[in-house]
Image 1 (cartoon, helix red, strand yellow):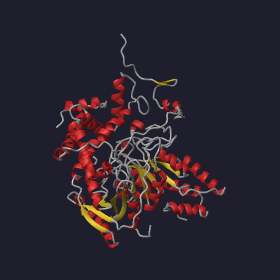
Image 2 (image 1 turned 120 degrees about the vertical axis):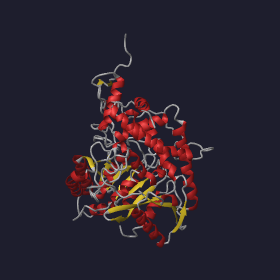
Image 3 (image 1 turned 30 degrees about the horizontal axis):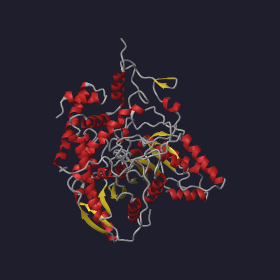
Image 4 (image 1 turned 135 degrees about the horizontal axis):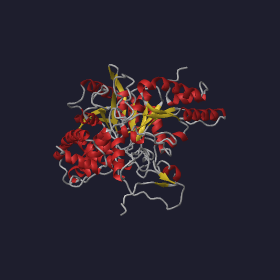
Amino acid sequence: MLSKEEVKHIAKLARLGLSEKETEKFQKELSSILDYIEKLKEVDISEVEATSHPLLVENVMRGDEPHQGEDGEKLVGQSPEKKDSFIKVKSIIKLP
Amino acid sequence: MNLSNLTIKETHKGLLKKDFSALDVCKDYLKRVREKNKDIFAFLTVNEDLAVSQAKEVDEKISRREELDLLAGVPCAIKDNILVSGVKCTAASKILENYIAPYDATVVKKLKGRDAVILGKTNLDEFAMGASTENSAFGPTKNPNDEERVPGGSSGGSAAAVAADMAVFGLGSDTGGSIRQPASFCGVVGLKPTYGTVSRYGLIAFASSLDQIGPLAKTVEDAKIVFEAISGKDSMDSTSVDSPEKESSDKKIKIGVPKEYFIKGIDPAVEKVTKEAIKKYEEMGFEIEEVSLPHTDYALSAYYLINPSEASANLARYDGIKYGLSENKTGDLLDVYLKTRGKGFGDEVRRRIMLGTYALSSGYYEAYYLRAQKVRTRVIEDFKKAFGKVDVLFTPTSPVLPFKIGEKIKDPLSMYLIDVYTISVNLAGLPAISLPVGKVGKLPVGLQIIGKPFEESKILEIAQAFYGNIR
């Protein structure tokens, strides 16, 4: 069973705001899912390679040539806060 | 003339013979969408203007006697996690409620290039996470066969739209069964192509080693036409590939039936219809053989670690800064993140993000994520072994019939367990189709046919055999 503190820690890592009531709800739900997943421990995985991609893939290369991409204005224009052609972000360094 | 049940080829013939115009077809479908959508709620957005202008262009081509594409003037529905330029794309999430797609997904570009008419965007479980379409932030879609029941999910909107004659075909996405299961629940055909055969550029990413776009249609033939129209390598998706040419052979086809798919948990009524369908194939002269996929039970556990892990990484982009919802009135940058994501994401999305974050976090990575990836290898080995003996596999698509709205939504784990017959296919990257093979009362039952990688043609051909020459 996950503790409430663990749920709060995970939520913070995932940048999700949770209320106290939600924390309790997710604590129960996540614990029951993790209990179910415990089953995986029964599988013999010695000498097995991990699969990260279902089909064999190789690096895909393309020529380094200039080309017209998506309209930058249109993409930056989606931002909730912008100035000219820049996206505005709250300051992350507190000035003295 | 009744236009509501036309196939792609019938639409094409009718347009060529001038039995009706593309605008007639378009308006007929839009009228039905208007009438039915308030009850079924298959569409989140209907773009009448775009559809009508596309249809008019097709009619102009006809009047100029230009060559007409098979898909020209055919009305379709696009799942709302696939971008159509200039049209809202919400992924059924509050966090993208007002997001306007800045470009076309490659599949949409291809359909537009073939002059298909895009009627609108269909409902889904938020970010395609779910098996009932109840996780949509904008309300559930109803099953057209019984409006008290779910249409399946996550592509429930596209499946319901096709089943209710609100579109000739639809596009869906399938990460763990999200095309096949709603196809089964709604009584339509749904094809999940081999991983990589259809470009995912412009598909809102969910679990990138599993996601694949595919068609939902009324007939196997239509599913084939749409699949061929949207597949192929795309320079904008480096995971996309061209299907290698397959040599056709006249060898007798052997069908494998995995014994692990007919154990406790399956609704006896579903089992009966599935077995009758398999018997029909036996009577047609196909050879049937029991096979074993011993890691079936573990596949679900591996899936519910890999899927949330990839989702938690993919959904990190919704930060309230670049686009979408932003809750940033007061506080610092961390507050923007916490408030935007706390408010913008629904319960199932938050559950998966947290599950994935936990599985990937320091100290748990090896016990969970890495172990799941190794079990994934075991699941793939099972399929390889089975395909050494047989050409295709037959299974039920879902262990249960369409359930009542509200029946399972309170218990997330019970919802996950419904995916048991479909998720292994995504873990292994295989192609699979669900086709309607019977009913229990008014509720449809789907048969799943799984093929070897890139053998879409074979599973489509075998699926067609069920119906003989009748559609």
